[in-house]
Length: 75
Length: 190
Image (cartoon, rainbow over all chains, first blue to last red; front, side, top):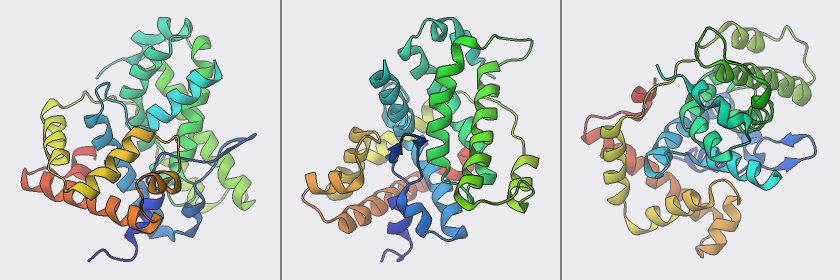
C-alpha cells in the first residue's frame, strides 16, 4: 500500500512550475510539505531527472526541456 | 571531467540546441549545488529560473584558466536566487541558520559523464512497467513540465490523486527493478 506521504511528494516532482512577472515560482504543493517531505521531494526529483535523461534521446530531463521550451518561446 | 565551456562560442551565437547540450551536462551539478536549500526553497523552481538566467548571461561569459566558467556562474546565480527567494518568502534576515549552512556547503562544479549501462538499465526497467504507471510516467515525460498534473490527469481520464498514485507506483517499481540489477539511483547520484 502506498504510504499517505507519497502522493504529496510526487505532486512536486513534476517539472511544471507556475510563472509570473517575477519569474518561475514554487509549486503550490511544495508549501504543504514539512521539512522531511521537502528533503524527500528534492532527493526523489533528483533521481527522477536521471531516469528522464536516460529515457530521452538527447539526454534531457523534463527540467532541461521545460527550460529549453521557455528559451525557444522567448526568441 | 568534461569542460562544458567548449559550447560557449555556440551559446554566444544564440544556439538553443547547444544550450540543450550544455543543460544535459550541467543540470545535475547545479541541482546538487542547491541541496542544502531544499528545506527552505523549492529547488526545482529556483533551478529553472537560474538556468534561464544562465542562458541570458552566457554571451557575456568568457572562459578562464579553470574549466566550466559558465557552470560556475550558473551555480552562483542559483545560490543567490535561492537566498533571495528565501528572503522574499519568509522575510527573514541574512543570518538565518539554514542559509548559513547552505552558503557553507559550496559544491565544486564537476560534470560527470553519462553512464551508458545505467541508461540501458533505466530504459529496460521503464519498458517493463505495468500499463497505468507507464501511461502516467510517459504523460509527464511528453509534457516536459509545460502542463500541470491536473491537465495530464484529465487527458488520461484519471482523477489527479489517481494520477499521482500511479506516478508513485511507477517510480517505486522503477527503483525496485533497478535495485534487482544492483543499482541504487540515489547512491549512483551521490
